[in-house]
Image 1 (cartoon, helix red, strand yellow):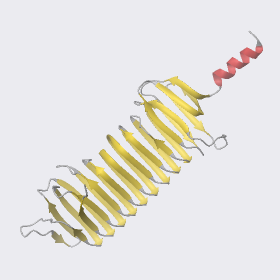
Image 2 (cartoon, one colour; image 1 turned 90 degrees about the horizontal axis):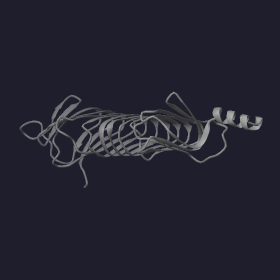
Image 3 (cartoon, rainbow, N blue to C red; image 1 turned 90 degrees about the vertical axis):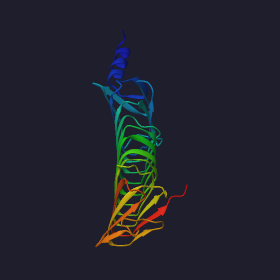
Amino acid sequence: MSLTLITALATAMVSPRTDTIIRVSPRASIAIETFNRGVVLSVSEDDRLHLVGAELTYEDGKVSIEVGAFRAGSSPVQVRVPKTANVSVEMVNGALDVTSAPADLVAEVVNGPISIARSNGSIRLFNGSGGINVDNFHGSRLEIESISGPVLVSRTSGRVIIDAINGGVVLSGITSTSLAVSSVNGNVSWSGEVTPGGSYSFETHNGNIELKLSRTANLRLITELQHGQFVATFPASAQPNGTPIRSGTRTTALFGAGGAIVHVASFNGSVFVTEAVR
């Protein structure tokens, strides 16, 4: 065997792979890190990992994909993983586009938008700036932390927890039975179905809260307002004369037969209960 061939084989054994298809364990741990490149993430039905536009290393059942600050190219890194994999994504600058998510996804993007579509499992997202958009999530848990930018969640079920600092939160078509939404500076808007026995809470320090309900909704709404008003555009009652009960900063209103418990609080803002448009 020639020295040139031996050197080539040795280099191939130790060098990271690029534009690669490899088989991994179904519950493989996959870590993706980029500095100035976006990522497009999707899942496959088999046990293969498909990678385009980056290098990887695979050792002891763990896959590492890294794109440093000085790597040439501007196209997003494309990664397709087994749907049962555990994936972590850390990005500095760039967009994260998840067209379908694996069983467990943890993603942190410092500067750039996050988009999630058609996903199940458990998802935890952190965004510094750029905004978050989640559509058609039907997994066990969706957890979002956002520092700056809008948070949009639509057609979603499962447990949902959202903490935003600067930016509004808009939720539409929500069928979750456990929902907690908090914004420091921004309005909160929600439309969806409430489930008997479900638990829902909405809080904002500076901003209004709007709940869009159907006229057949059954819930007990408890509001805490320091500087704002409670306004309902269709009848609510909590006592025999058909008017809400007010005690200090708290208002309790019954819609339908009750059932779900909804807590709403705002320091500088009002609460509006309006009829959902179908």
